[in-house]
Length: 303
Image (cartoon, rainbow, N blue to C red; front, side, top):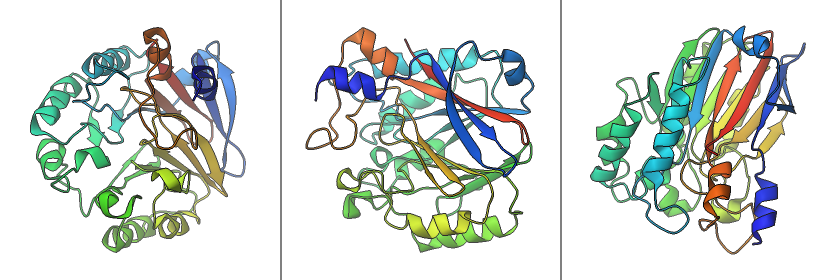
């Protein structure tokens, strides 16, 4: 894959994505520049951050300093002009699920000023189905991989879809978690804005590379009655947007290294870029949400 093509694919540096909540409750998006009216952002009732795919323990040419790039992201998050209500890490905290990797990641992530929610990626469950991850990052109210909470009129759900990745080559939620999701959503009104997190995308982004969840259709059917659903994922180390009806999907950049765009190459191997280009495609996102008003999803590069 040519470096120029890769940069063009993920070249969002300096841009944000404005997701507007229209009269029908749907989120629509368009590119906006850094000069977007800050008054609009400051009036938001909720701001949170998504960070993903930190891969602590990775030591290869694509990025031999993943702890430094994670630290750079943490410093930037702590310096945001609008402090986030919380930070969600959407998985692959570690690279090989080693306790020392989780310990190092936890030390760095503990510097966040905002509360941290986490969910595992497949790199966090190698060999032990997430035991070491759970010992480091488990939440008390987590059941069958599902967490949920409410904030400022928005309902948040975090799902785990990586425990069977080694067997299926895709994500899988499992019936027990789907049953919990159905029970959780039954208490919510159809006009309640939903934000759903998972590591692997909840649609068939590129199944050949495992960029899909085998039983996602069952989850999406439960989400379909809601007028506004935002699904935020990690796993693919780049920003790709997709929509199905009222559901809007967006994958996140990594803080560690980029992966090729879907179908570019035989497999999703880490892409080595010059350092000045690398930092431009690594980063995190902020979401500023005010029901009935414009919702801004802004991508922050580490450059």
